[in-house]
Length: 319
Image (cartoon, rainbow, N blue to C red):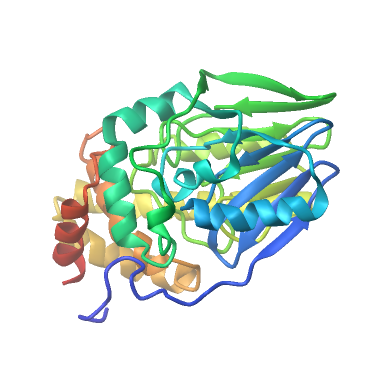
């Protein structure tokens, strides 16, 4: 590993090509070569947006694409989880309601400020227009526990907590009639899952719960939209493999009494041949292994990442 590896995604300044595509009768995917995705549902009388982009300036581009296909009002914004890169663009939609699980709101209360500072430091390109983010945090106006159903006219849209994985608050958006799912970061495709706030032991089961819905199309958190059941299965299995491989390697190291630095180097070497071509592999691995090490050492819940902790961890593992 290079001694001069730049912190997180600070070296990633290349603009990505954006794709806006219809994936089922009412659902659209806004994707950008491994940058965070946004899912859009156009109902009979209004629009729902899931995951907002990092800033209102970036959200404006999503709105522009939506306006190319409909003039219906954007009524709902759904936060699939609490991470800043997913929620700080919310003000750009002028939505009537911002929806999230109660668990996600609890995480915003507990660690929203620290997460915001942490992520802005990690992803300078995604937060280039950070001055367009209103002061303070993005707060849901409606929360739910377990499941909530919205009706966009006659179109049924379910918000469901299928289990913990990427965070404890993960929510999917499910269109049962067309078997289309917006997964947030529970599923990635050709992109490395970020697991710094994850529940490694729960995540594979949560992916099985997604598979049990038999989605025909899926917008992952990062990567291209999955538009056939075979592609969906590939996205689920790739995510599951990565999470399982990281945790198995780290668990083995913890059981052998090795320190975090050694476990990190061993796990990085083991996973590099299979996954290093995935987007943000080098960015995610130190965070992922740190969290897996904590979980395997008996820390049930993720510790808060602060901007200071980010840099300390990076120096310790990559310095």
